[in-house]
Length: 215
Image 1 (cartoon, one colour):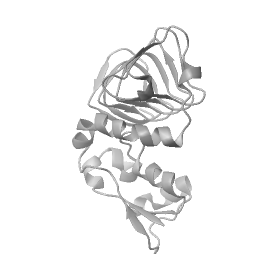
Image 2 (cartoon, rainbow, N blue to C red; image 1 turned 180 degrees about the vertical axis):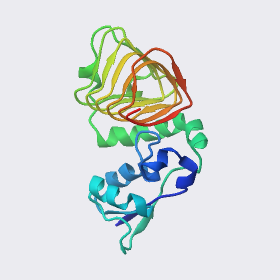
Image 3 (spheres, helix red, strand yellow; image 1 turned 120 degrees about the horizontal axis):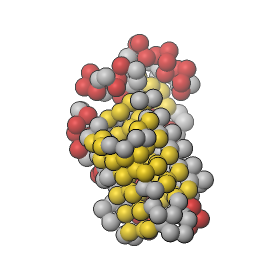
Image 4 (cartoon, rainbow, N blue to C red; image 1 turned 90 degrees about the vertical axis):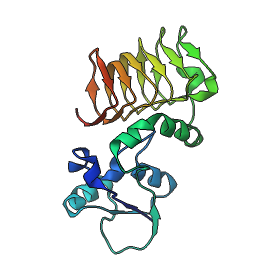
């Protein structure tokens, strides 16, 4: 049994007003997903006001008297520390992601996609599509496109992670950008973390930003 606990939620407001710290992503995953990648035998420790929400969302025991091995939480105590190392976290997650998922690089790319760097540093999940004219630049670090990602008229400079079901349309993703599932992004995004379902479909710049869900 792994015990996943909150750590320093007061340092991550307002993100932690509606979620536990172990739901905050860094690199390709959040701490809870990292634990569940190892085993389904997971119990949670969190603030009392999040108990009902976490039980309903995860189906896992919350704040129950269960013994187990503590599982590491966030790798730093402040948002700016994590954002400052976002590129390193994505790069560190690449080989683990590649080990647990099948790479469809050779079948997902349309003719006219430009690959820069070693293609072994690019992962493309099942059902993902990269349209002609896009640039995937892995010279600075790896690129991970999860399942069902759509990339149109976009440039990606690794290290970058794009979560399942996200759509990039006219996007320029710079190093250190980690997008959770079902985001819709255009314009330039640099060294930022989007939790999930973030809609930044317009042109313009977002950098060194941590966005929640449904923003």
